Length: 479
Image (cartoon, rainbow, N blue to C red; front, side):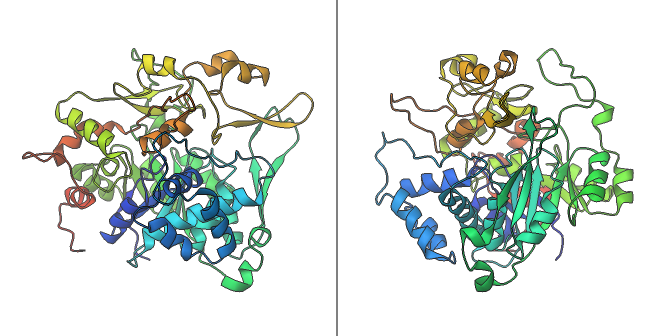
């Protein structure tokens, strides 16, 4: 397989949706779907009526009809849900998820990848977060059933994933060691057995394709660890710097903040590309590489190419709610937009890029007015109780609840519910019973302020083709 020169970033909850990934792949670069929260996204699309029929068409291609029929019966609303109706949510994950939740997660990931690959023969990838551990095995399996070509994973150290991919290609049972606070000597593992969820799947499908695995790293040391200690083969690395959107790796050494309260990154956070070249693996550079000059610089440094997120997040094919996307682009044109690296917003504890914009969670008034709630739970932390039981808590949940679970109050300050707020950014804001509508949280890389390059001569929007042609300096011959 020829390696792509441009990897489209896997962004947010459904920002990198199947439409964007499909278009980028059609244009002969690597389109990537975000695998975060896809069960929630599939439910939302079905409840909204699936007006274009994409969900139902993809569901009809899933190899087992019974779970598809259950999902349709539970969530599909012909003609769409009333405007004041709350979205149904999938059950929260536990150490022993229900068969229905496993089916839903597998199928949701199958649907997204199937639609991204539909109508062309070019590779497609999926992006997952190592920090969101509990759905990952089912998510990977669903993507693999749809023929995904690349798995890209960051926000953690995904040592376990290569071996899991090997086994899932054979429909074998797999386990995922869970990170647990206060675990002591005890280890906890999640389990996923394809044959238990879909009896006969191995005999029906035979061996399926094992995708290429590209972990996202921020240091040579991490790359070396993945090579030496990873559970299977790694096909390359995405090297992401701290100017990238979404979650950033914390700075090395003691945390220091600038006058704006942002983490300070230094020389220790710059990856030694000479050492990366000596490892002998393909690598792509990400974070601040969204210009023709940086693209050429990456190739000159021996990179296979670049990963670009922000420019694609605001193109026509992006999954960002259209009015929100246009509002931000208008502010880019007016030089009235700024991105802040927030050290505490994410419940993961990783620094998180936040677009400063009125009406969003970046405003203190909006943040203060939101009642804390944890009803999705992707970013909860597993912990061992004093009684030796496993439980879950999130520093963005109600403070009293968090404290009763043994959490520390200082960990709750400034935390926001990325599960709900990033879902709202993609057009799925939860409406509460009292009528409250969940506000959005927008994340972008520092490149956001430079998107005016696509908006010259009176243009107010741009396409994925525009991004690729701008970066490469060459016309794209694909239709």
